[in-house]
Image (cartoon, rainbow, N blue to C red):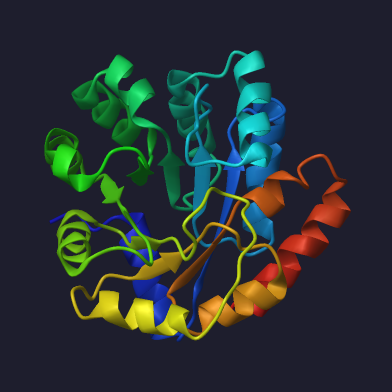
Length: 260
């Protein structure tokens, strides 16, 4: 069985007792050229895996920051096909694991089998589709398994044991845990329950667990890394895309240093 770059990265980090830093940016915000530059900056600042957003007109799981980034990318004419082509371009320069975060509508219009084939050929390593639960993802999962593309599903504090079991079975690469019942960019309030919830998920799966949604400060990242295998930071990075590379790098390095 083909071992994905995502799985290899988590195994490599586990051997060193390390945790994954997984930054998110919106592809095409403010343009494709800048996205190429930003990916280089993210890797230079210690990113282990990169989550690349695909712009969509109705991003129901995202807050204002990522909604606005998606609109800027759409105004630039960025499509799912253009994002896949972007990953193909990147593979000439980097082998960092790349995950596409997209809604189901663009995949449906593209065609599930064609999407998986083109994404895997381009060098995409995994896909997150927040509005496609595993119960309805059997066809996408089938094609993904055939091409070695990881499918990553979400769990929340409200997830039942049955839901955890389903997501654990369906997820490859890692399980994405959302510690808040809200949208991206919502204020994160961490308490002792985080460790309890993650421990509960580990009763059902030995896959790595990464935590995202609402993570913005080095303090957040440090606390989460004490329980999880990876920390995902999105809106707080997207807000800083317009800053100078020096300011952005300082912020990224502060997150990297905080993640144990």
